[in-house]
Length: 176
Ligand SMILES: *[C@@H]1O[C@H](CO)[C@@H](O)[C@H](O)[C@H]1NC(C)=O
Image (cartoon, helix red, strand yellow):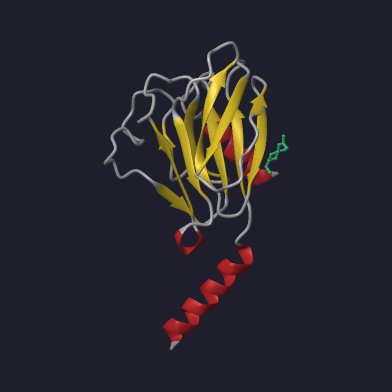
């Protein structure tokens, strides 16, 4: 009985917090980038998001959105690249995410890492490609999850130390 009431309380909590998700895009270098979103069939499309160099932009997503995005650097051709993949409000209300190199492992300049806002873990992807911390082959089991509905997606090349962008961002978000 204790177990059951705990389950019901958890389900009720999830039902009330189920809401639109957000991805905080952090452009780590001076290149302007355009984020191109692709939604699963039948879901709402999201307009391209232009992010100036060294700035951040927050994109909100409809409840239950499933899809991906890639980054196109200013002046480059619009080719699907390294993908950020996400499922909001998935199984047990969690947010599922990963960085996938399956479509275009040559795109080492755009989407770098995704992790939950306010936390540095778990992280999918890396600052320098190629790396194993991502979907690299179709049967890789690399999807991560978080109870939160806000993610950070790092783009471009961090200026000095590898994790500087991520750490600075998490600190900013935690303290603001
Ligand atoms: C994005 O969200 C973060 C965290 O809530 C906030 O600090 C920042 O000001 C927002 N940025 C924009 C451009 O709205």
